[in-house]
Image (cartoon, rainbow, N blue to C red; front, side, top):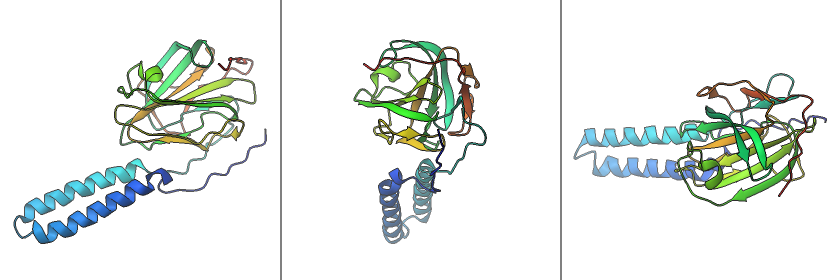
Length: 240
């Protein structure tokens, strides 16, 4: 499959446009009102308040960063981290939604300080995209993968593997955005979606996949190789 890299350099993610402008407006308005109302009464209090607001806004700006990342090297049989964060699960588990059998699951938890753009972990054809409403348990709990609000994407790689990627909302995250479209080609280096304010991404792989990360290891989205697919394995999951 010919590879087309159409990744544009974006300094801040478009999902944060409204939030960032609103936050900047509140920061500026509070600064002006505080300067005339609070500053004459308590200069220290005004400076502390503004310091807290500036730090908070800086955290939000950091959250919506959208770094340009190009994976260096051959992408064949490679599974890259779909998100910045830490590996919280590496285990064999049942995947009932699509495969109906055991798979190797690698889960990455994103804190509020991480970039929250999500990348495609493999290249291929998008076979399924499905959104599920659900609860908002803490994202690192095992039941979050099946009970929380989530979005499931299944990708068939050029070598015939089916790889399932699941964006999972957390206790704070309330919005999952998925850009993947059924029937379209997808490539490593491209964004699959975005999750706001702390959550996780699960990747389900064939059982014989070679794991390349360890538990609690930090990951860089589209940079860290989390697994390698066995070249002779082909998955035949049934789409329910």
